[in-house]
View 1 (cartoon, chains in turn brown, red):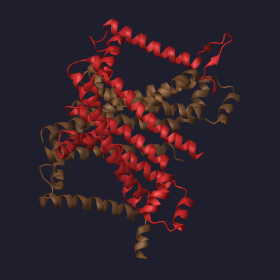
View 2 (tube, chains in turn orange, brown; view 1 turned 180 degrees about the vertical axis):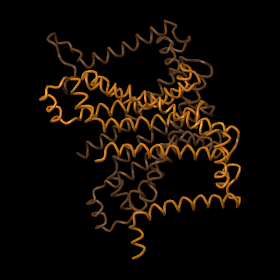
View 3 (tube, rainbow over the protein chains, first blue to last red; view 1 turned 180 degrees about the horizontal axis):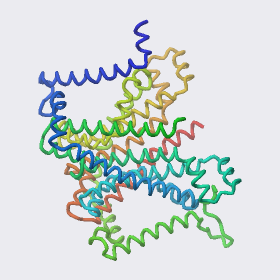
Length: 256
Length: 264
């Protein structure tokens, strides 16, 4: 009976999940200490935890974090301007939408991040390459979701606007855009996720910028605990970023 | 509206090009003209935007180059092996999470939040574990496609019609029979969708790993053309990779679509 009650409780699965995670880490520590896992390939988890403070202080993680954040901010700004603008344009010109919507969808599934050597040639080994890669990777979902949001506005709302003799601009800003905002935000969320993945990934690949470069530098120095700690730090930042976006989404769309 | 994309017949009997096709042709022509004008203007560094003729010739050379097909074969092997290992692990994990609400509440949020993290950051670890050869690229393909397949299968499993599950239980089907006769057939669409997403990210993960550290594969060819500043070859490689990736995605999507149509 008690076991069933525990199984049904809301927090028990979460606690068990965390316990299993901690136990797995402890097991790895024991296996490394026992010589079952080579410590020159997998460092001790305790060493990784100890290196957190070292990499934060010595590698100037706050400055790197701030740089990645700035790149993500500029990429997001470009996404909002060109993504929403592109979606609104396709919604306004129906023929253009019919002609290009499949192209935009194909762009969403294309491995655009592979163009980074091309962007390196065009923009140089600079933050501009990283920002543009983030922007290109996130553009398609923002355009498609803006288009979906504007197209799925309820007919009755548009009719109400027309009965008030709103001008096309008023109809857009007072009816269409507010009604489409939740869907547009889903697009921006997806775009931001793609942009962040690509920003950190390209930072790592071209060895320039913030958090991605940190991992590359530590790996090239063969600082094993530092490399693992930096990877854990980037995962932590990504997870917190996604949680933050989800909170904002829930705040914007309380009904969902 | 549905007819706008079709070719219509004119009075003379010749097929008239629809307005949508006209717009498509106009956009393509405009892009090509702007490209050619930029190439001729010298506004950018020489060869950054090569002439279309030069790119076309480079694509031609690439397609008759035996060495390219060897590298394509290496990348295909890495992506395919990664997809099989990551896909099967994702399938098993997704089935376990989808079948048990308790397991899902305990562990699924880890997958959910780890899924969108940039996988390429694990590459240094994969090199240490599996070396600089094929192993580390296969591992990158595996971890890239594991998450979308696992999450898609877990979500698909929860959407199975409960009547089907009750039918299986009323026939006293064991776990293996439930998986093979009820769960897997009922989840064909989410599994195919997961494989489609997994294939896309496995291609990206593998090729990025090849651009970072490798001496074989298409990713290596791309970064090699960057290092030697052979821009026409780089453009031709990117064009071929995009066509292959989008084509593979479209083929897997068609499987999902045909399955949906059959079900209707």
